[in-house]
Image 1 (spheres, rainbow, N blue to C red):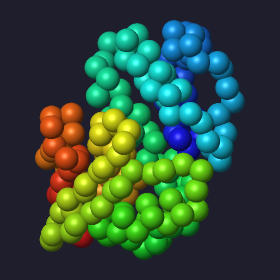
Image 2: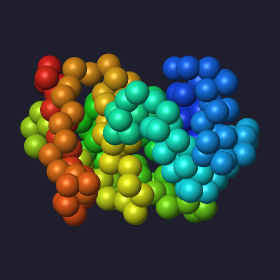
Image 3: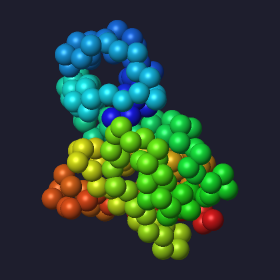
Image 4: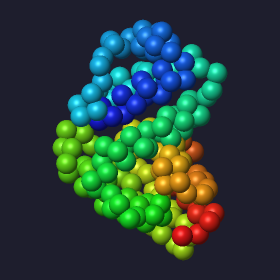
Length: 180
C-alpha cells in the first residue's frame, strides 16, 4: 500500500491522542515502529493490523474510525496526486472523472494496486462505485467526505450499497446541496 496511507493513519491517531497511544497501538498490532514515507510502499498487512488494534483500543467502532481516517486522508491524496486533477474542477466534476484520475495515478505508481473507482454524474449528484480486494469501504466513504470538505462544498455523501452487506461493490451518492 502507498506510504501516504500509513503516514496519514499515524498522523490521524497522534493528532487525536498522542505518540504514546500510537506506540501502544503498534505494540498491540505487533508492528515495528517505522518512519512512514509518503512515496514508499508498505505491506497491507501492517495497515490491517494497526486498524484492528486501533479499533480494539478505541471507543468508536471500526467503521467510524475508518471513515474519520478516510476524511483525513482525502486532502493528503489531493496534495500528493494533485497533478492528476484539473485545478478548475468542481467536486462533482472530480468525482465524475475519478476513474480517469485513479487510472492515471495507478499507472504512475506501479508498485501498488489501487481500487477500482468510478463515478457517474446525473445532474447535481454523482454515484461513485468502489471495488477493491481490500475491505476498506468505510475509508472510501471517509475519502468522499474529505473530498467534499477539501472542495469547500456543501454536499451529502450517502452510502447506497456495501460489500459488507453482500453487494458486489460499495456505492455512494454525492449530492451537492448548493448546486454548481
